[in-house]
Length: 68
Image (cartoon, rainbow, N blue to C red; front, top):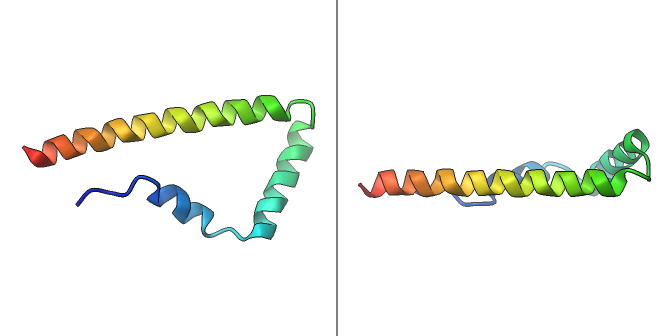
């Protein structure tokens, strides 16, 4: 049975309410500062993209093994 692609990500986000997400964003803003926030966002976006690519490759390999 193949796993759904966004299942883990949405499962983790589903556990946070809107106030928790706002609190996390405020804490990140305080730690990083408003000047470096775009750089942090870009780095985070690249990291997520890289993670998704690696995950897709692993899923493809698992599906190929299951088909054999």
